[in-house]
Amino acid sequence: MLTERNILRRIFGTTKNRNDTCRIKTNDELNKPVRNKNRINYIKTQRISWFSHIHRITDDRMVKKLYEWKPMSTRLPGRPNSRWENDKKEDL
Image (cartoon, rainbow, N blue to C red; front, side):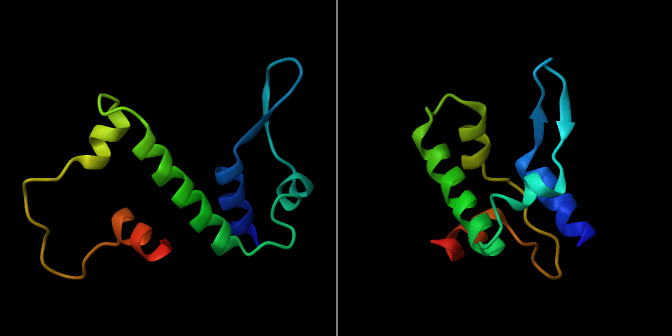
């Protein structure tokens, strides 16, 4: 439960007060958007949303350049690391 709260706080970020100070969200504020939703589906939806955002932005933006960048070296031997590209293909 503690790890889940930490992850949700990172996903939803902070809340801005009236006097322009930030505070972390309470447990009740974290429960409202995900009360009866499947968290895995929510994460997949957000990942697909980010993917479509990347394709809409112009080619001169740094995020787009980093997304399209391909390293020139090869991977080290052993178990392959999980990549964002693989997760995106699974979600779609």
